[in-house]
Length: 170
Image 1: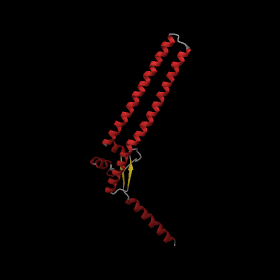
Image 2: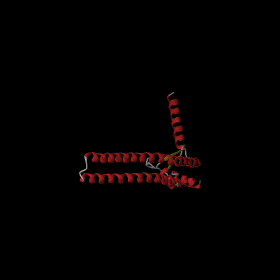
Image 3: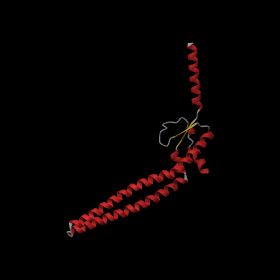
Image 4: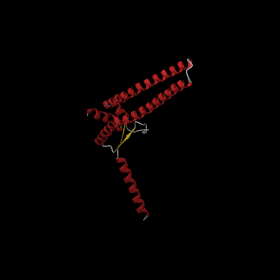
């Protein structure tokens, strides 16, 4: 009885080991793939246009704040009334608030647009990766662009170049 159980256990271990060995695993550097695509340049150009609009607005606000500061200093030198000085201070504070809100809106819009522009690119990379992996007989593909793959025994299992070539053909 003990020999039968031991035999069954050993058979299962050997079977599981052979299944694990049968699956091929590839690696890919998706960041490198994305960097080679013309779609990335288009996305970056669109993000740069958004950034330029916000930069111009922030520059205008900065100039207005400088002018308010000069105006305040001039009024102070001319011994203006406290009410006039307070009006300038409040105006300056409103400009500071607007600059802060503009900066926050910029960050939010850039983040949203970047996700919107990059998602189709990432989806295309994922699709091409699946096609290449399937054609080469790989069961799994691990992205090593984040440095999570510490070591790979076979450089031939890196399908980055094949995916780039497949995507540039389209």
